[in-house]
Length: 113
Image (cartoon, rainbow, N blue to C red; front, top):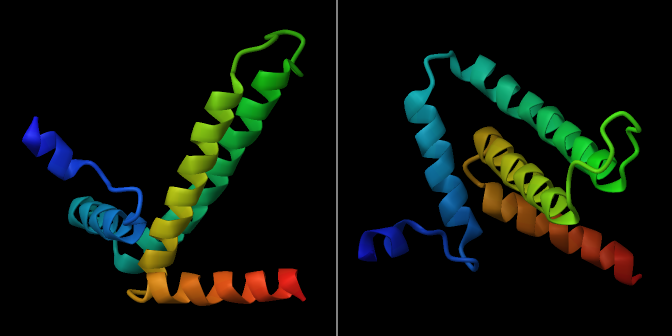
């Protein structure tokens, strides 16, 4: 049980987890770095498509299928988008945490002005 607790990401340390996921993906990739980078960016499109499918399923917008998803499914898919984007950003720069913090600060400043 202790091993599982150590392996679980802490909510306050997302970039530590992103770094671990990035390293895990890099270790398992047999592709050239440039191709890996492009595919990680394209993975975002796949994940956003899954959000769309979950929203359509949660609202029953496909009459043939009816309600196939819950709003919890939508939340989970949105989390997948966020994690995928964070890993993609880390793939582009080892300074991902700083880059994101600076961008978030600028967005917050714009929203407050």
